[in-house]
Every structure is written in C-alpha cells, then in structure tokens.
Amino acid sequence: MAVIELPDWAALAPALILAGTAMALFLVDSISPRSTNRGLLAGTAAVGSLASLGVAAWFLAAGVGSFGLETGGPIELFDGQLVVDQLALYFTIVVAIVTALVAVASYDYLQDHTYQAEYYSLVMLAATGMATMATANSLATIFIALELSSLPSYALVAILKDNRGSVEAGLKYFLIGALSSAIFVYGVSLVYGVTGSLQLDAIAFALGGDVDGFGGLLGLGMLMLIAGFAFKTASVPFHFWAPEAYEGAPAPISAFLSSASKAAGFVITFRVFTTAFPLSETAALIGFDWTWAFIILAIVTMTVGNFAAATQDKVKRMLAYSSIGHAGYVLIGLAGLSVDGGEFVMAAAMMHLLVYGFMNTGAFLFVALAEYWGVGRTFEDYNGLASRAPVACAAMAVFMFSLAGIPPFGGFFSKFFLFFGAIEAASANSAMLVVAVALVVNSALSLYYYSRLVKALWIEEPVVPRDALAQPIGLYAAIVFAAVMTVVILPGFGPIVDAAFDAASAVLA
Image (cartoon, rainbow, N blue to C red):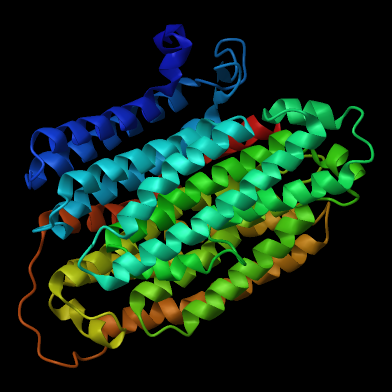
C-alpha cells in the first residue's frame, strides 16, 4: 500500500495531529483569551482526536510497523528512541477514542466555565503525551512522555478553581505524582548503572553480557520502575491518589484519567518488561522471575479495588475504586507471561483495555450528566432517575453490567479472554490458577455494587420529587455512542481481536 512509501516520520502522524490540535487551541486562546465559543473549541478537539484515530486505524489496518517483508517491520525513529509498531498504534487508538468522547461530552459540561480554551488544549496536550508513551522505546523518552502526560493532567484535575475539592485533589495528585516520578527516575538510574544503556533493546542485550554481581541493583531498579508504572495505572499500593483525584476532578477528566491515562500507563509497562527485561536472563541475574511481582500485584489490586468499591456511598468514588480493580484485571496480562510466550493473555489484557475505554468512560460521563442536572453524589440521590431520563439510564445499566462482566456485553468477552488466558498460563506457572480464581471472585463481588446503582436508577423511588431533566446533546451523544460500542465491539468486530493479538506478538516476538 502507498502508506509504506511515506517517510518514516509520518508514522508519528497520530501523535503529531494531537499535538497540532493542542497548539491550534492554544492559538485560539492567545488571540481570544476570553473565548467561550464552545462549538469551536469542543469541535476542534473532537475533530483532532478523530483525525488521529482515523490515521492510527488506517496505519494499523495497512500493517504499518508489523513484521514482514512488505511492511518492513517496526519503524524506529531518532536512533530508536521512538518506535512505531502494532502495539503503539493499538494504544494510540484507545487514547484517541477516549479523548474524542471526552471532548464531545465536555461541550455541555463546560457551559459557563471560564477557562474553556485552556481546558481543551490541556486535554489534547495530555493525549499527545499518552500517544508518545505508546511509541517510547527508551527509559529517557518514557520519562519525558510520562511528564508530558502528567503535567497537563494535574492542571485539569484542579481546573475548577472555585471548587475546593477540585483544587485539593489537584494538589494531592501533583504531590504524589512528583514522588512517583522521583522513584521512577531513581529506578532508571539504577538500571542505567547496571546496563549502561537507556534504550530498551540495548538494556536486554546488556543483560545477556557481563553484568554478573549487579543483580541486586538491577532488581531494586526494576522494583522502582514497577512503582512508577503502578502510580500511572492506579495499582495498589500506589492507588491512593486515584479516588481523591477522580472525585475532585470534573467528571469528564475523571473519565479521561481512568481510561486513557491508565491505558497509556499499561502500554509502557508492557513494552518495558517484555523488551528490556527478558524473563530468562533477568531471572538468572536477580534470582527470581519478575512475573511473580505482577501476580501479587494483580491479585492485591483487583481485591483491594473491588472490596473498597463495595463499601462506598458515593457513585463517583465507587467508580474510582472499581477502576483500581480493573487495573488488577489488566495486570494479568503481565502476570501470565512465560519464557515460552504469553501472547494470548497479553492480547486479552489489551482487549479489556479497549472495551474498558468505552464502558468506563461512558460510566463517568453519566456521572458528568448527573452533575449537569444538579443531582447529588450518593446512590440515594440517583434514585428514580430512569423515570426522567430512560435512554441515559439504559446506557448506564449497559456500562454497569459490562464492567461487571455480564454477557452479552463487551466486558464479558474481555474478561472471558482474560480468564482463559490465565488458565492457559497456569501450565507454565500454577500460581496463575489463583489469579484466575481471584478474577472470578472479584467479578462476582463487583456485580453487587454495580447492580446497586442500576437498582437505584430503575427500581428505587426518588427521595424528593424531580422536575423534567434537560437532555444536553454532547453528553447524550457521547454516552449513547459509548453504550452501543460496549455492546457490539467484541462480538461484532473480529479484526479488533486480531489487532490485539498482533500487538501482543509485536512485543513478544
């Protein structure tokens, strides 16, 4: 196809489109600092996200960055500091989808907000950082991309300047983020001290050489890298920022951070641990298989997240803790790797992240809709909303049942693949049976608190009489689209399953 005749730098087009959109929005803000033209601002952000999504999907379908004589293999840029392969394109698509949904929904949510141009430009800048994280191929570019994503996110959480909760959440998010960045950089320095390289494949090559006697330092460095990634993915024990930030942030930003930012955190975790730290060489040096760290992390994260979610009285906080539980599910993708492979279980984790991008974003956007209506934060405040807004509440029921893993929704299929991926991985490590059981038990527990919200919406009587509710176009469109995609994405889109397997194979080859 003509696409492989483009110059190499064109492979970065999806990320460059996001960056260009952010710059265009900054330009609008510079020319008209008080601009409140919501149609122009939200439209520009949505068009930029969809253009990035379209180009990334086109590249993925054309086989850009895949292995083979015709496609030429992964495209390396800047001496291998960035790499564009099927994994990078797959996760760029996830980021672009969530960004587009958030941009459309924010059209209504930001009505009368003072800093609208800043809001959209910061969202696009954070999305650029996340797309760059998907292509980063060295610990240096990973750190730069992490910060490019994180710094706008801190500002977005605290953008409701008249809301004390938002400002407090932004400050806490910033402080914990700064601490995690420091831990991550210290881990990078230890890995560099042992291997003499920051580029991922060069680190792997060095581990096969003369580095005996440095296993302790390498193990400590890897542990610190895991801590940095655990913060970005809201995994236990670095999860404590997530409920505070998600609850205080504008609801569309909560959706953005819990879906797109989490996916970006996982893509660099997948790439670093599969490319830089081959299991056999690393185990020989540090004395144990690093997948054990992810086995423990997966079980603890999904269990803590789900049990905490089950005890919440506020809907937004329940969703925040449930997103921690879902981080535990995705960690199964790393826990199930073995020396002989693990494409199936990693592909299942990628599928879950794609479906999660729709169902979790949609759930948080419903909370944004409730905030738009002036509904309170507790489960009781949501009682009887279905009588006034049946379409939105039906969509919310789809999100809840899909997050719980009930068929025939997308969340069921992705958890189904995760379960069988864990069972398959148990042939190499019997501890994966415990992970599979934990997945089933936690999914059953999650059905309790997700159903509790559906019951409040559809069965409970309102505590106080409610007037007719408005139907904001942007929020409704984003919620309904996310609900439809949650239903049809996996059973209807076989190519997505193939793309997940190709992306997993790209880093495990």
